[in-house]
Every structure is written in structure tokens, then in C-alpha cells.
Length: 115
Image (cartoon, rainbow, N blue to C red; front, side, top):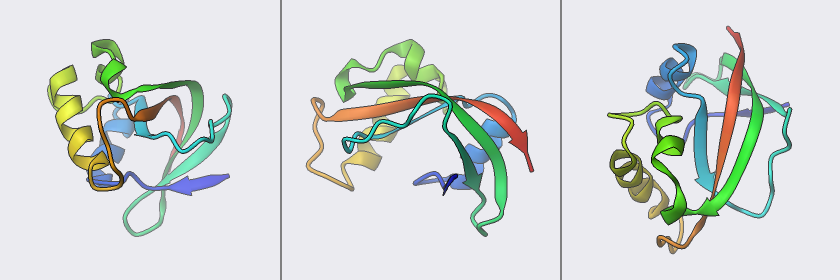
């Protein structure tokens, strides 16, 4: 089972997951699609388990094609597409030659267990 942390603001994003407000996360697409039904542990900053999630749906699309509805699934900020784009553009531009045509992978998940 994979174990991971959010790339930025990990504890805040974990709290959103635990409250049921965050049911998706987006990363740069690196050629590997996470399988539907895959379970993983999200870890606190101190590496202790926070919760277990299960992938329900995976969307591979260009950054510019994420919709308002998809952005809201992340549960962050004011839930708007503009907020989502600003936060993710800032994050992704740190890791690659990012542009609006860069492929991203949005994983929609279900909270299975809280620890």
C-alpha cells in the first residue's frame, strides 16, 4: 500500500480530507495511472498515518481543461477554478517546464478510515 503526503500544506489538506471537504488531489501526470480501487495511506508530517483513502476515479487532462466542478472537489480555498489554478500553477511550476497544456492527473477518492 502506498504511503504519501501532500506536496504542500500537508496538515491543512489532511484536515480537509478528514472533514470530508477534500475528495480529490491533482498531480503532474508522469505516465502511470493509479488503478481504481487502489488504497493508500496519507501520512502526517511526523510520518504517522492520518487516514486511508481509496481511488474512485482518475482524470487525465491538460491543466487548462480542469473544470470548475473538478476544482471544487479538492475542497481548498473558495472552491473556485481560479483559486485552484493559481495554487496548482504555483506548485507545478516548481517541478517542471509547466504550461497550461501540461497533463495532470486528478484522483477522486473516498475516505475509508481515519487514524
